[in-house]
Length: 401
Image (tube, rainbow, N blue to C red):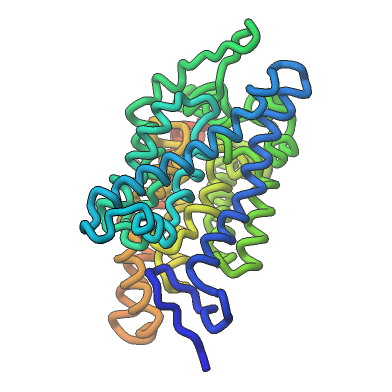
């Protein structure tokens, strides 16, 4: 006899096996984060300690920062449950029982991984409050949130405290270390300096200051705690796919879309090599978001066709915001926008799947594909105009205008 899951969403169709429920999914998700957590600790703590630049306590700080993010989210959610619960459930056991099915630690851990190392703890606390209380609990708790909670906390901090985080200087053993930040000397920060300059994009300017593309893949480049190592993220992706926690095609389509459009932008800019699109997917939060946030079951479409459209639009918007917008990243903004449209995409893609040969299905498919193509063309034109030294392209576009 088949078993049916009886808790809150999200549900996956593997509940006919013993132990296959939401709790198991969240546990496997945390395991999938472990390669990223361990690498970020090694890169920012252990390796720096082995080089003799910090002491043992400072070596533990990256791990402390990540754990603190999880604990802050856990405590804040517990306080929320205590304040809002009925008198009968307003005790330690009642709160723990709710926390056991709310998976409060996960948004906090992801939030810490999204932030630059040595972000002040008070900013992490504020971000955890936004993520947990505003982004999750005020919407009804686990399974009811519209936005990815960690992403919302990260975005608010990015917009409101970016100057504070950017200008942080930390003193270690009498030596000043400039901390990686949202718009500091990260690869995307360098890329943003080319916007509107008329200078051609070049491997020597964008990649060589950090080594080579292999260094980008391994994760030895500057960046937030969890976003730099594509290798660690790939290990997590393989685990989560194997355990059927995520669908493999969502990250692949998203990353592939960013790759292809970035490649076309590189061609427009006068360089047809694959180094630039490779650089594009290995910088910033593309890989991390593809595996750990674009696959989140609550804030993304549930049916396969909806997931495909979601990933395609997400890839186009990421490139658009990254190359045309005023911020150097683009991943967080595009994800928040797509979280808003997740339910409509899920609804209309469901109609397309069931009525593909009938008027409603054909109409909705045409609208989605048409909007997607318009966004692609606009992204290529706008990005090409800002990042190209190709005068023939600029002249041709001016003629069209």
